[in-house]
Length: 450
Image (tube, rainbow, N blue to C red; front, side):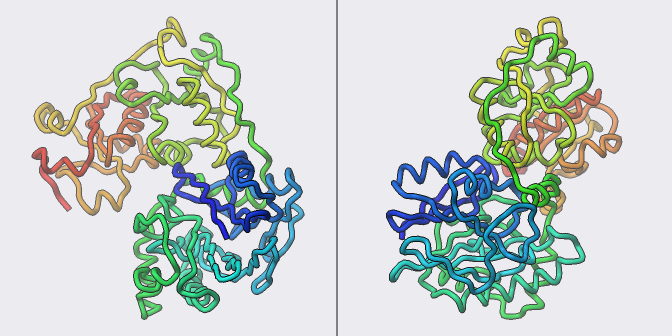
């Protein structure tokens, strides 16, 4: 048995192509299925089956799209209510995929109808655990509403033990979430591979012998998750269609200017350093290529009913279109180019100050506010004395809570602070972008509190 990992670091997820050398199964495909197609072609295998571990909440699936396009059998839990034809599969059922034996195991917790798949090929065994048992943690249990959280957390605890009975300790473990995805209930270990037996010794779902304690601790440590998740489940239940990943014809200068004048969502993809120095008034800074920050935080605060316009290089626009399609933001318009004055001659071009921690310490006049746009749990762990905390994903709706005057804005790395600074400026405020790693703040001399 060979397992090919198809990684999506922008969302912290993985998909898998599992094959016996000839015939293959795809598990938890992302919407941009060309990556799966390329992997199958490179391996010289035919995909006959596509399986979902659950109705996903953090991305739009490509499973249905792939199955329809290639005539593969599409395995979805029989208990899930979906609006399309699928091959229903239930707990304990097995499917033969070439020489691979695929067994569905009910592992509720992340969702009510979550399945894991135990795949065997001769002496080889692998567990595809979706949002169940992750590397060092488990999938979060609060995505279906507060009223379900406690019950699902108990289910997650029981499901981990069920999985331990269905597979051996030597089985390789392949989760879908846990590589930065907010679908994880806690920080992952950073491991790139593991076995079920290694999780028995290290994962709190196994090491905590007190189920009530596990449930209390997991729920107590659940944190905010991106608001775009609310769109993913319905999209995946309705049946996604293939995304158009082509770059549209570039907007004219007049049209771009008109959109800025109307206050539309025009996102500048350039590096935050370039943006701070020179940008079109009314644009929002979302530096492309910063790990998972771009997709996650744009999706978190973007109003899905609005039209999105991307501004940047051809490559950045093309890559951003692909990334955004995975969370259901389709068909953005684009103005291709990196010189604000050439993109919209005559439009207002602005800049704002950008400093490091030493600049914040030495140049900030007494009384000017510090705005920390990290998440509340980050702020609670440690923060600069006197800083005001409004998480980035709440800033648009809480703009009236930002203290008066020039605002010095920071986050954990500089990325979110760049976004926040552009939003503040767009709202008529004067930001100073503090661009640095929060881990360096204390060493620079900033007074800290916890």
